[in-house]
Each structure stands twice: as structure tokens, then as C-alpha cells.
Image 1 (cartoon, rainbow, N blue to C red):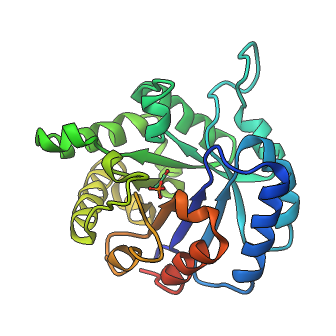
Image 2: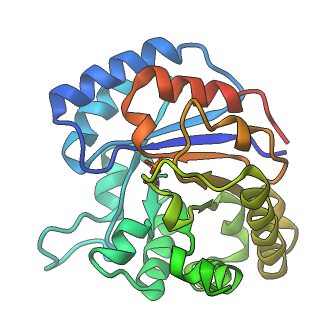
Length: 254
Ligand code: PEP
């Protein structure tokens, strides 16, 4: 049985004051929510304050990235032990905005996934093809490669903690999500590959969909058997919108 998971990626939004306002709204809207895990991923600068504001609630704290080394001369970077110290339990790894902007490679992502798991952080490993790759018929190959290289250093007994988010790049922030059927198809393929790599433990790995999930579009995904939740960007900046998406997945244990 997999508990659904909805994660909000705030990206580079919200000062500390704004972040605390949003968390106040989320704590109210999601008080007493059951049957779904909820993770809030504010920017690094708001992690400490948001973590304190979440104390006592069921909402969990996540970061948007990490470095694979624990410490050292890596100016501007943040390590897994630092995130753990702030109360993070999750971390987004390999988001397409980091693969394409700072140019993270599949091997960087692999190191970050391993560092997360070694430090008791659950990695939300993002995979997904660009429009160009989809149009060239390379979707399956790209998603499979990103997932395989990203999880290559995961020990079999760590695999159940993994979260994989299928996020087609062309759907992120565009207002044009994948169809539920297509997202479900790719999630099903991911499950099949994870099974080949990790055996029965793959049955416990949660697979999310991300890309323009909003209160208007979540119905496409919340009903799909292979999709265990959502990674939400833009709509996670609005407490009512995010709460509506969370509620759609609550109670859908499958
Ligand atoms: C994301 O950034 O992971 C994302 C899915 O963004 P959006 O929901 O805005 O498309």
C-alpha cells in the first residue's frame, strides 16, 4: 500500500514573511487532513522559519536541492546534513529547472539521490522529457535513462523510500499538463523499470506526476491508478488551490 504524496515546490518565491503567511493558510486549510502525505518545499532562506511554523502539524518540510558532499569548499551550496538539521525530511532532486539552468547531469543527480538517502532525507527524483525529445519519439528512453542513472547508487533496502516524479518539461509552468492517460502510462513504465532494478520493493516507491497541476486539472491525475500524488509548482503558492489538490489525493491509498 502506498500513501499518496503531494509536494509543493515554491521555487524562488516568498520572502520569510510571505512564506509564513502562506504556511498559516496551509495549516488552517489542511488541519486534520488524513490519508495523504504533504510536503512543503520553500526556498532555502525560509526553511528554518517554515519548519518552526509547521511544528505540530502533519505537513512536512522539504528542500528544493542539495549538494552531494556533506561539507567543504563549495561556495553557495547546501548539504544534506544542513537540511536534516533544519528539520527537512524530503528534498527535490534533479528538477528540470536545475538540469537545464545550472546544467545538472544525470551523474550529479545520482550523487544527490545517494547523499539524500545516506542522510535520512527522502529524495523526490524528477525525471521527464523535453518537447523536442517527445516529438523525436525519445520520451521513454529519456525517462528510463534519467531514472536508471539517478538511482544507480541506491541500495536495494533503500529503494522503498524513493519518490519519483514524472515531470514532462513541456508541461511545467505552461498551463498545458499531460493527459491523465499519458502520465499514467509513463508512471506505469517507471514502475515496471523500478521493478526490474529493485524487485518487489518497487511496489512501495511512490510515483508522482508534475506539470501544471491546478485545481482545474488535478482530476485528470488523482484518478489514475499508477499515479500516487503530485509535485505542484505554481498552484502551491496559493493555500486554497494547494489544499484542493491535496484533498483530491487524500484517502486514495492504492
Ligand atoms: C514543478 O516545478 O515541479 C511544477 C510541476 O511546476 P508547475 O506545477 O507550475 O507546472
